[in-house]
Image (cartoon, each protein chain N blue to C red):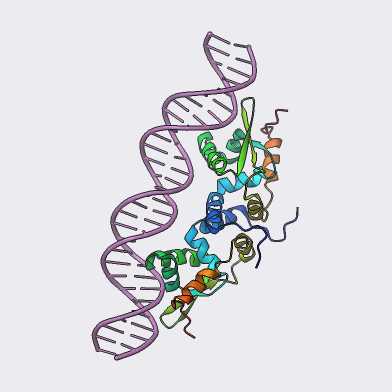
Length: 115
Length: 115
DNA sequence: TCATTGTATAAGTATATTCTTATGTATACA
DNA sequence: TGTATACATAAGAATATACTTATACAATGA
């Protein structure tokens, strides 16, 4: 029963706990499909900015996501160097795409694309 | 991006939260490899019987595991009819086998096999 | 029939979690 | 230089979680 990419059970529990919150799980799924900034999540979840920021901090502190500062915005994305990236992908790949959410934002002209 | 076995994101979050506890995750991993009774978990985790029982109840209430009563013992196993079984398997398959734990119990003569 | 064993449940407690409100910091821009 | 915007952080409150202790219940065996 060899396992190409084993994850210690304690590590797995920590990751699952982190993702076992609807808001954070949605954030991670979205970030696996788009880079995204904080204010977009605030708009998307109709949630206060500090609440979003605190969820992002948990994800950042655990290394799952990284940030990129551009002007006054902070863009988040999945951290490609996350040691358990393949396990993360395994967990989120069966979840339906959340692209429609970004498309809705875009349709409302609320997508931030400051290029 | 078709998905053979999609799991709604809210459902996924609930499952991940349930598994995001080291004790429950270990229980589920063990049960995916062996049928097991309550007292064995008590011995294995060096944890009180009510604490174990309460973890098992959460897993049972969510449908992940089922019980089989045999004399005074209650044997638990993964519920093969669990609607999200394949997602569950996806999540636990990268975790190292916990068979060694059962083998340790057996070596100590503490394995219950009342056949 | 009564004591023992395995398990479940209830109630209480300590701690963790997730939000709110208030405030601080950095950048942009007039 | 002052104000607005985006974000982070701190402190507090409400709730959820995971244990403990006490007790109930069901099956076993003397």
